[in-house]
Length: 445
Ligand code: GAP
Image (cartoon, rainbow, N blue to C red):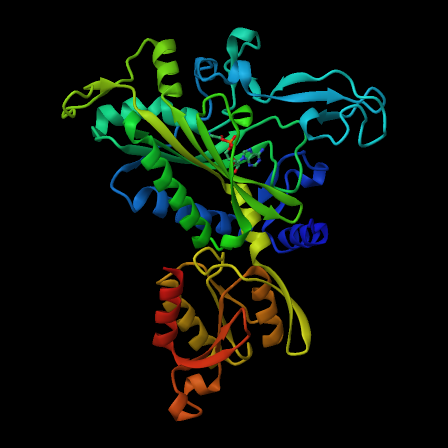
């Protein structure tokens, strides 16, 4: 059941608290673009860092690249994007609105004004620009529509420089651009998006095993960023809906407030891409197996498994999953129950009173100690303590630490203890400073 009210609340919180706002907003925005603000950027970095840990750095078979966004246009000709990366477009004859023909309830009638819709034609979604000082067709280059293209261009460099054995993979995080006909639903369908992609190169006979391994990894990652198992649904994409390069695709769908929609994709791209680039460039992209099994080939084009995750859709799913409203101490509150690993601010440190220098000094010391384990430790000495807690709740800070006179030794048995307050329950405990440091370290690791 769609909950559009929840969506409005999330969009409003994201803007109000410096997570995400429309791109170039003072000029009325630009459809399909959003900017990440101070807390948004920290959340995004944490989501990406966790992906890097799980998909690249925690493994011995993975390598990173950061390829150029602009590439030789032959890349996109060979990959099939120039001829085939398109969506069906129709235009209303009355209000002239352009619509995606495959997303209409009534293919004849404009959902905006009821006008008659025109013929359907294929609209290529790649953004074009020109390299250099000429603007003719020969200088056309494309903004990459998927980061994968840059990974294929680096396959040979990785083989030649690192000499990895199969199976191995290349991971990349970066921008991709799609001239979506109808960008919508906040950061769900964007024209400028961020992807986290792995191209995993395997022997042709090993693709199924590898597909299963990455499928499991995607579920583990979903759980690590705080998406409930019950909100993720696998969809076996039928052949008619699969991308031209894929022999098998599973969409990981998520229950967004506007319905169940794609979150991530896992595809078996076969040897489609490497074979196409080999043919088009004339450069051999075969892998030389130094130790082939009896009767097996020593030189062949590896097959590819591709887990592809959109950063923005992940962040939207994270916000949807974390958004909570409850009543605490007789007052309504809004909070984000973010996993401590991805929360933008890990803890907030506060002196009980800001006009008591001895409290402020001790609180600053505690903050500095915590910053040795993580830089994102906030300071707040503004307004009453309840309000400070509420401000942190709304941005998902899991812990708040308050320094009071007992910390300074007013009650000698409590010297060097502080109050640790937990976001989700509002519960507070009295712990030593070193216990608090250990707790926070454990929670964010
Ligand atoms: N390299 C494969 C590929 O790009 P895709 O299913 O077209 O496959 C992969 O895109 C992921 O990128 C999607 O599952 C989604 O998370 C994200 N994505 C795709 N188009 C998007 C858009 N217009 N806005 C936001 N995220 C998008």
